[in-house]
Image (cartoon, rainbow, N blue to C red):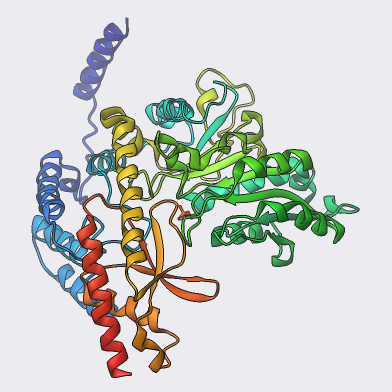
Length: 508
Ligand SMILES: *Cc1c(COP(=O)(O)O)cnc(C)c1O
């Protein structure tokens, strides 16, 4: 039937074109930009550069360039000519100035050396452009979200159809969205009446442990001041100290605060500590408080048989976020926001927009996500993960994570043997914090010693690591995100740290 209609239509069109005198074709436009053949040529340029880049196993961190110098180089490229030549020059400069995330020298941040297949899908995403908040604009991505939600729920264990998964552009936005749902759940009138709805009620507050800065930002956006962020005391492993949670919450209530959400972390940014979610969930339930888990870094352990216990209790949380662009090795960004209760996922945003939202949902609009996510135009974030999961399966992620966590344990074991290094925690995942404290350091007064080491290391261009404050004192921090790192690379790193550290001491 459809085929018949289509050939009929083609006939109508050709008759119409023959009869019409209109000949106005667009002129003056650079239609070559849309030429499929030049697309292929450009892709070939890019792919061969990337192939070379991915094959480079040298130990390198970042080639830090003065921004004004880089500005000049970039402007010079613009003066050149030739489509492929310019593209090639831009890609070269891009690769040269980026942190070498695929190199064993990259040990510093939580963004990953991407699984290349995901990058290929991203090219497709960008070229065909199907923004995914609405089913009709992005049919396959919305179906893929449904599939991935159920695939990943195998490791969470909720009943099919009772939970929801929403993709957001990053964990910061995911947590903001979840906290908005939590707030509206506790204060249903706030959405329509604003703060006037709070008359006679306690001030809305949240309770957090060693939270990422995005949590305070989300609080600020929701109108929760610093004074309404209840800090839950930490134990010596930097996890929320469970014994102190009840008294802290009760003290907050006495001060007139209504804590509507507890935000815990599985894998804190500082050092990858895991809060006791299971026990927190009991307290949250008892006090009728929403439990949100920031699993941006650590929720991926769900897919590892050997490590899943670390996130035990996550299924009892009301919501949690999971950054696939970190420990699922996807390109930035794709965050999964899970809600235990599907209905509650619609609580974050209450909006009427007749041009997009249907009053009478049909079979298509049931798959729309726009009521649950903040973005209107949203990239089809799930596609990179879905294609990778379809082709390589869970094992790729599980094996890589298990390797990286074991590597971190081995590195910790080495540090424990070295007298001039001090460990500050027994690492729970793939983040390891430590200090270089040689015996001759005390002769000098160098309060910024660890930071100086880190900066010189960065400028040296071989290793890229980060730094973090633990108990107010700076530490060196490595994050193993890359399976190309072997223990010898860590030993090489220690050698570099000693060399740089001694140079700093000598010149002090
Ligand atoms: C990275 C991170 C965030 C922020 O997520 P984005 O995706 O960068 O917005 C929040 N919490 C934790 C624990 C993180 O590691």
